[in-house]
Length: 219
Image (cartoon, rainbow, N blue to C red):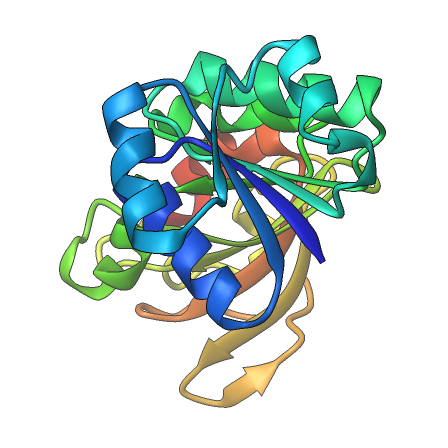
């Protein structure tokens, strides 16, 4: 595949290195001349100096034939603009953006970016067991229907413990897909009793996330 990477910092450099190793055609767009020189010394002529947010620059590097467009700069705004130009002007089928501020994730999705990657969220998810305040984990985003698949752990002090699932007060439209508790994995009904430390997998609208968290994990 032909993959364009905007941002030649550490993330862009090592991403390009891995992709080249797998046999893909890769081009890095980097604004800093000194950094371009370093990448050229290490990887050869796979780097072009230019601004990935500019349509003329993207035209010059053949963005219209790219299979994947990845923006991994330190600036969320630049990553968003670059991916939007690639998606809407050059019709790149797959755009991926790095997000430094997790609060920007919904905005990126609503503006048509195919995949967003937040290093903050990834780290939190990996240490979720050790961070009681981070009881909700994002498993998957479904573009169709604007839905998220999330996993929630029910803390022992939650007001939901001991209640029927139908009495927990889940936000409208929440679809509970799976519960894992002492009985094992099963699809709960409205009569299922919520146990401490149970894990609930549900499909929700992004705007219902805080209400669901409060209903299931709130004291």
